[in-house]
Length: 577
Picture: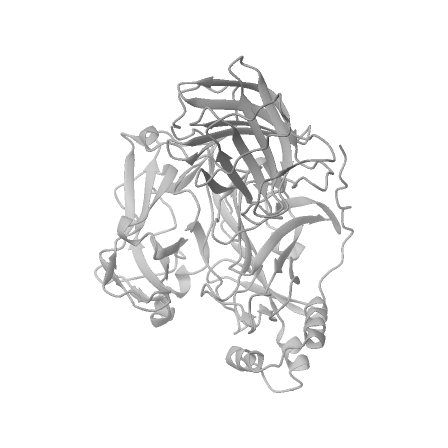
């Protein structure tokens, strides 16, 4: 195995079932797959995506008897937003207008086509409820496509209706009666209410009043002994991330990893320190991913009825590690944290055990080096068929996806490559936002088989940076990983990631000497970036040989790819109404 193998990170899993209680006194007109409270006691939203018809149906309830509006925004504000504005007159007649905003000003009527269609509406108890629909892609330049990944919703309301008899009277400014919400409309995993798990057995892993250092970024690692009170196998059916309410601004993400079965510790003195201070102690606990929570995501996750996370009995996992990332840009001091995770155990075993699998690029300078002032920089990785040769012949079923980059990431996807042909996206986060990292429930399980390969791409925008962005764990560094939850669980493959091979660095650095990571990092930090060198750097990433690392903690294998394999790609979707 290459001495340059580095352990990447720790992430992955989730699932849906019930929706949290909403505020509206009006019962929805229909049954929906998803719901979310857009603003407490003010605005609720229900929706269903029909993939066959390529359309989405919304039902918006807002505490107002005036006009109400919902928009899809490309960047979080009014500019470029596609907006539906509706109202219900005293006669009961419902109106809906298709509007578009060219700036942070009153949205204009869509002068191309009407693409929002009203279905029903009513006013009751001071609230307005309107049901409406539109296509996911309307082919209209004044509409915003509802893409896979995270979508930015904006909403607002007025105190009076528009006058349907006087079209020259336009919408009045909403003032502070507005807000926004990030949601993965096409893959939302609705969080269940805590009450659903009352009475179930639980166990927790939590920090114990940890003093958070006054540094901008801290990675703290703590080993926990697996629960020993369950002599027979049990299935966790859900978990809840327990964020210390005093430290919501500090806790950026929590990773739970399984320690390799060969890892041994003194139970009376388990490792508990900065991750960089105990690398040898945690080496076998840093790459077998179990779950993750990241900023902006829902804290409660429920697993599907057919699968659970196995604990107790003769489980090989005797220890776990939590890696906690604290983001402390204000350099606050004397902050104590007791965040952690709670598991809810079902009363009956389920059919399958859940497993976790990650594809992408190693989070080091030799894996990622993104030049500054680039609107679109592409990085690719490839997981070859050798890595999946031990998949069960009947296949595995992927049910959840968690895409992950840092601040510069704008889009990421993983494609399934079968017989040198791309057959479908495993997940496509066309629209990605680092501050809202949702676990995405796939509309239906995706089957993977022995010999499948996987191509992963991340796209970055560094127009706001003057210096190179390198792979690493700090928020200002970058990552490129897509993490998946599946069943039935395998025990020999947790990750498949790539780095640029040493020979690629020797070539670009014009040296025949052995390469180490510090040398690569120092060279990159002193490199002069121009528009021409940036183009050359993209070419370098496209042709550089790769080192593929795959397997599980303690048993990683590596393979060199002299170039990224080519495959027959599927055609980009064309917009059809």
